[in-house]
Image (cartoon, rainbow, N blue to C red; front, top):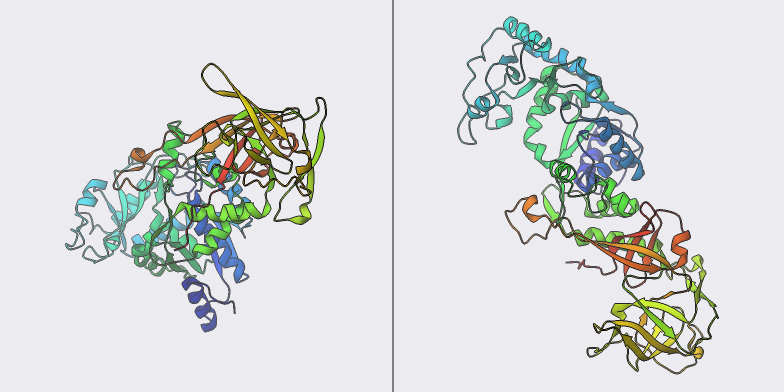
Length: 543
């Protein structure tokens, strides 16, 4: 038996040992009303990962019971996201696969006097439901005969009534301490075209009614869901017992994933797309899985993160820096190094022979010696980043300054002799000499440099657009404010710089560590673009 790593696996191990289950069958149950976001990744990894661990099955199950919000586009996006994370489902099933079964079980409840058609509006039902300390009031329609309820329910199915005019409610207990058991609505009238069944139906089951029936029909053994469904579990069990379904799954709840600075609401993410605040569901700033993929987040890093945060019974909030730590850790080990300057200023090596080009070796990844080196070139004119030169340097400034020395990465030590400024005092050119005897790896110059900077050769570097990203949400020093009030409308910063020519020839989508800048992904959709994946600085501090 597999060693348990969390309370869910403890439950499974116990049931396997007692013979209550012979195999593990889970399902990942998204509603196709938007794109999956990072919060869904935890449930996704948990459901698929648990099935994998026990040699069981995991279905991809689409809860498509609300046709007014669901699209085939979202179905296809969810399938892409799951495959991107490296998982494969046993079967794809939809709630709509079971609409006929769900309807027949609703009829069964009506005939047994366990469900009734109610004419109260949604507001009236809410008003009569009671509170945590007061019981609810019975509907005046609660005691309709089964025959009358069945006739009305059939009329609902036939489209006789308008949306909201009538609902079907389970007849349970209006004084139950659990409000979810106070005659919940299990079917409503909804005249909307369904993405799979078209206009066959104008009544649709509520999630709390459809969910346990669909789990049972799929053979699911463990219905793993987030903590907000804990209070719904008695209703889940009521539906299983009273509909008489043969297979009886078990619902288990776990704490959902919440991350600082991150929009964790599908509804609000949809609003960002519709309002044009982002370029789409896959905007690199979006916490959707499509956005993370487009940004260049490695799926392995996301899975490692979900594995490490574990499975808990109480909700909590994870620092976004902790997630970035896993991304940075993975890319540090795997990403090739390259050089780029985001705010270029020209450096003339006055003693470097004109017309000469020298080929040097550049370490592809110091963490992977087997990756070896690749050639880079240097000539009389190069570019460095403007931030790496100071006219009036502060104390302990180890980059380039007048009469100061700095090492060019994988190349030579240079000394600043002079610089040129324009009429505004902006430095336009830096004049240096290089020390030929200071070549990296065979330095005999005797000069000790504390600073090493990136650079590119002016003769063969390529123009590049560099996008740096901020969080979509301002940090959590805005208690009580909703997402719209915390939106950061200055979350993209664009630079026009230069990169090594290797960047232009590398495949689209490749990830790099730009030396001393950060981790970036290459794209050629709008010219040569490097988009930030994560910064070099690790903001995570283990507690």
